[in-house]
Image 1 (spheres, rainbow, N blue to C red):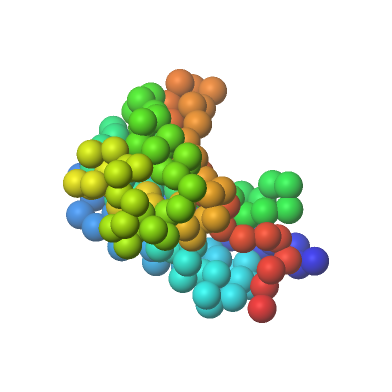
Image 2: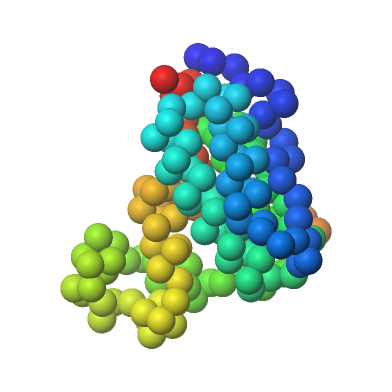
Length: 159
């Protein structure tokens, strides 16, 4: 197993409501951190895409300041995106999490299983769900705010 460099774990990126390009900056910072961990190019690309969707959602729908953290727990690398909004997007998350066939839903067939808001918006969370193989979600922090989380890779999955 490869041990994670301490510099790659912890706070990866911080931004506010006034930051011009938080999604692009978060992608670049996360890409560097994941490369420092020795993850493969495909794992980095998939992880950056999934996290950028969560960063964009936080920036659009929540209150800042915001932070992206990377940690290792239970043999997995987990990325968490913190905002200051306590509201969890439960309806949208539950719709995606309970969908049995996201591939069919993304293709347009079987879309009757998706809620109307998801048909209009929120397809990015389907991408997150697919890339994370369902290992993602939201939680309330001990401070009463919210964190989106996503499992990026197994520790030791470097190429």
